[in-house]
Image (tube, rainbow, N blue to C red; front, side, top):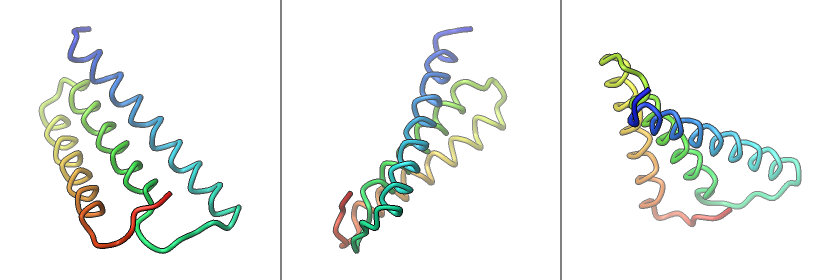
Length: 93
């Protein structure tokens, strides 16, 4: 295993941990009944976790088509996060 594969594996594990944490946070907020209008910051964090996951998988896998597919998905999640941040809505937890 080379350094790039190791870095990619660590990246997708961290990304998956962020996704699971953000989903748990959203479930807790739903059960507690705390919801506000605007773009939830946890949604942006979840998108960034998905971005890290996709980048990690694209670096860890050696096949070209998988690398290209996950790089495209990572770009899509980056664009979604940028749109959410640039929208005129409030960002909150």
